[in-house]
Image (cartoon, rainbow, N blue to C red; front, side, top):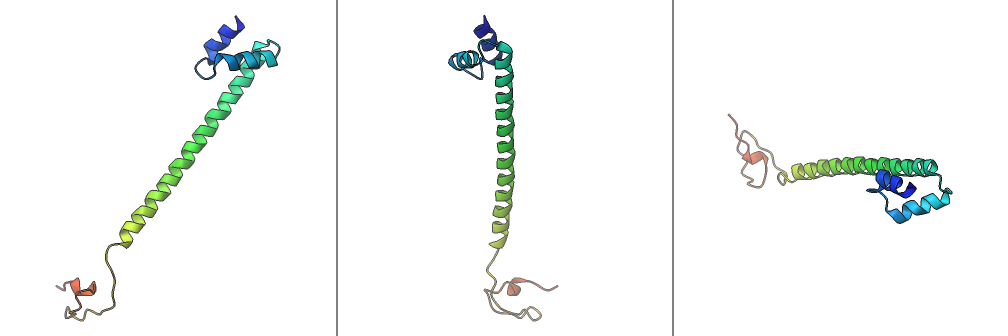
Length: 100
């Protein structure tokens, strides 16, 4: 009866062998087994949610770095001065700008 009750409560999270082990360790005291397993599962869920939160933060930072890298590769900057639009250095970004 005790194993059936524990299987009903924790069957989806813990297998029957482990439930029997907990029951033997606590001398058949179902209340202690329930307390131990509940605290264990809550700790595991908290740890998993913290890991998910951390992985989301890392993912956001990675995206931010990728965006910055994309912005850096806009064009190659070479020296040159665009004086009234008369710069003839084709590789210079300033020569590509048009004056009104």
